[in-house]
Length: 472
Image 1 (cartoon, rainbow, N blue to C red):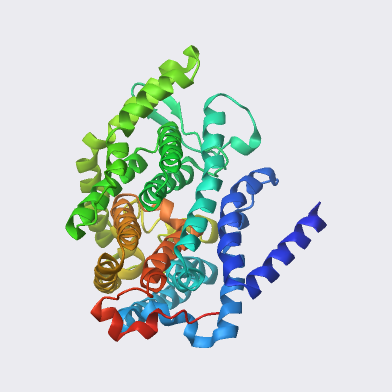
Image 2 (cartoon, helix red, strand yellow; image 1 turned 180 degrees about the vertical axis):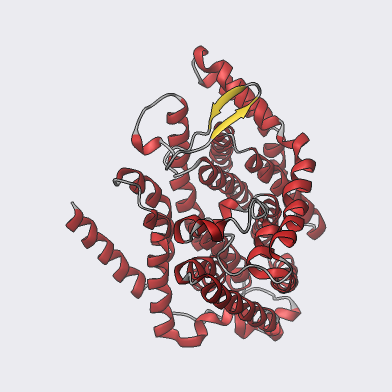
């Protein structure tokens, strides 16, 4: 069995090395199956958390050897808009990486922390190179959503009492004490409920995107059904913030559509999102046997509290984490990887005790690892990325309404994840999730290339060579 697994892995690595297209799909497949495999291996080795990075790195190295520095061209944006912010940010990353190595003699910890920041940047050109047509985007989203249907299935099976090792959380897991009782955070096939909830929330957002891109009513019906399944699964994980993520995504999505005047006949998606809560509420009551009704009610009541708790959570974990980080490590930060989830695996107690709970919020994590200079440079980079995306959306709004919907949906999803990161950074310590975010940015950056044969926006016309696929 071990020999066969090694042989399959080697074959997949060879495919990654020789094909960007294969790499994208293999990364998604490996990222989704590495958690259930880990659960079946004795002692649940932490190696499986970063296994997806091996396949991604192999594909990236192959692309770089074939194309040289052209592989990184998509990172530059319009008129090299992102060059200086990226280079400045990379410098601060290196400084904090050496700070960790010198202060704590923790090379592995520094590398783990550095990979978390580099993963989205390196995944961006990979996705950009893969995407050439709208069908490429649809196939990629369909593959990701297909895997997450199994994630949702695992959550439901766990809730229904199926006692399989592959459905249990890795390690001790999370137990929720709320509403005067104890609730199990069902993780299904994922290693934790947090990871399962994020993927199902992302799938719900992408299903909404596909609803806007398709012209077939039957497809929209199935997309609506799957959104209900995903939202129901999130409720059973007990991770309320992911329900908020879907609501915030819908808000930004429709706000940006109205701003760009691309709503058209796509109000179906809005009706779907507005009616989603009632659909899930009554649907779950009918789907489960009577003996589970009281438990379903508890999960639904817990999920409903996310809205009333949101302001307090933003204050305590958003801005509060920033203040806590400054008090604990100062404005220069403590070093790369100190606030990462992997810190407890690769460092001693004296290192992890430095940060306390200040890294639970995203701003606190950034200050702990990068200091205030690193936080300001990252904000500069995000602002320039925002400017680049604005130009892309202007282009999309001119050339094609479908392009506009695709660009707006992905932009709304990315903005939503920034807000979620501010109040809950833990899930963004997962390498696969970081790679996925980079892939989504790459798809958005590639949108002008997809529709480049039509009448372009003037700013794109002046720089259209950047949107000719630079990687074979």
